[in-house]
Image (cartoon, rainbow, N blue to C red; front, side, top):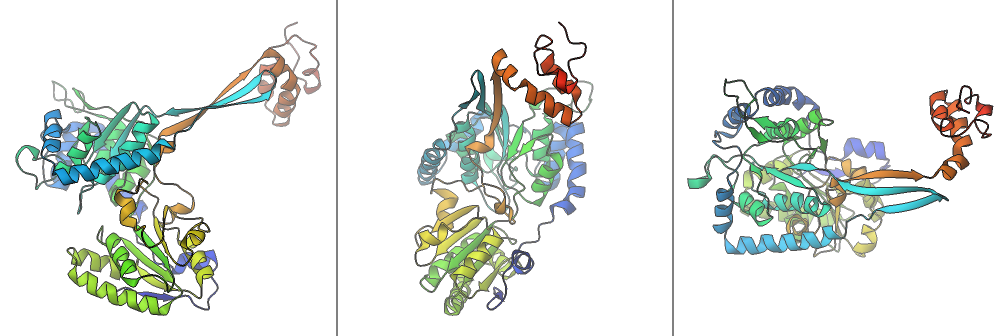
Length: 466
């Protein structure tokens, strides 16, 4: 069911590992051709394009693209009490962790009378994407909304695909549980739009047709945003790449990944259950075990066969585990295992070894690390307090998961007195001359009387006021 890759006795340099380690095929570049006309259509036709595309891709034509307030209220009223309690605990824990990510403004005195202050300012408006394909993700509402709210974003909008299987008052709207999570978090601007068209709606905004039928010229349906966050399928990722620059993005999130670094002390049933848990997300989901124990590998493989046969989503899980993106990787020792998982840079990395905490502290590349037998990835998906919107496809080697900082911009405020500028003016003028940018130096000279002693040597004082 799951392939083996035997790296024992082999040199483990980073380049070779990139070629041999399992990875999902997720060609965002190839999807650009498909999403470009979709985004152009939304930019040109606005709300009518969004309705047409919802009918085409989601099998339902939304009547109202923005979910009415009474539908959100009804979704929360009808939410199962146990699900509500679980969501409330997830929100509480996420807020505790993300509150500690707040950044304070700092002022540094560079010289007497010269300071630089770094201000942390939230983006004005964000659009948060919540997937709605083979599974339902109210937890992704929490993971996107909580850090945005704590960062102080003034305007937060959520969008999720309309569900054709909805009934009653929820026909043409996102999944009822997603709507309930939005209401629970106080988000009242929610849209029934999915896929690449949702990213385009946030990037360009959308209007109804004008009175004369002119596309995208009537009442505003959705105002454009400054930034879009949240995971999605390959077409969502491609739209984010296409529109980056029009909007800021968090990442081009691909299929989910779990890597488990384990030695012979690990429980094979735990490992198998965790590999299966991520495989049920998507047929492209990656489940990778890295171990120096062939006996553990054999026992995990046997446990997977038994567990997969009994799981609800057997076809999806089987496809994920047997795909090229999943595998059992055998290595010589834990040192080699650490090298492998650092090269793989998993979205989720579990450490199930002796001295798991010490091993975890040696990991440099991972979206999130789960330490020991009682910190499964599914805990992080919901109630650990950590964020589950994480870098995939090896991008954990250079990128972080979603956090309060994702929604903040650092702005430097430079405040120098006349005396402080005079002290460094000669150096500014010298560097301007070295870069052949005399206007830069003249901008300093112009602030002082001729003969100040720092302009003549650079030839920048000619013609200055006396």
